Length: 163
Image 1 (cartoon, helix red, strand yellow):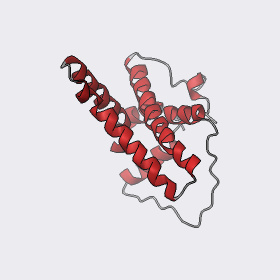
Image 2 (cartoon, helix red, strand yellow):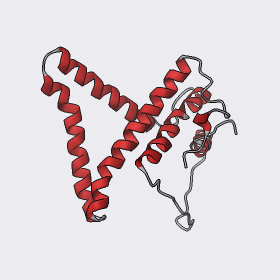
Image 3 (tube, one colour):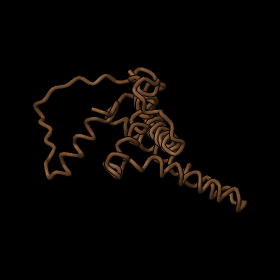
C-alpha cells in the first residue's frame, strides 16, 4: 500500500519469496490501452523504473535482475564511448551503439512478419523509448536516493499517473 507504482511486481515478489507461484490463466480477459504518444510511453517506463527504488530499499535487492539491464546497458554504452574518445579510437566508442542500432533495425525488419510496414517501422523507436526511459528513471531514482530527496512523496508530481 505504500507504493505508488509496481504494486503488482512487489506482490508477486513476496509471493514467490514465500514459496508461492504466480498463475496467469489464459481465460482471463483484459483490455490494454497503448500510449498514444512517445512522450506518454517515455513517462510510463520512466516512472516504472523510478518507483523501483522504494522496492529495492524495502527488500534490499531488485525483485528481478532484468530490471538492471537497461541502466547497466546505458552505463556500458557511455563507458565504451568514453574509452573510445580517450584512447582516440572512435570506432571502439561507436561499437556498442552501432550494435544496438543494428539489433533495433533487425527487430524492426522481423516485425514486418506480424505488423504492417508503418507499425514495424515504429517498433525500434518504441524499444529505444522503453530502454532509455527505464534507464533514465532508474538513474533519477538513484540520484533521488543519494540526495535524500522526498521524490517519493505521494503529493509530488512524480507520483501522478502517466496515463
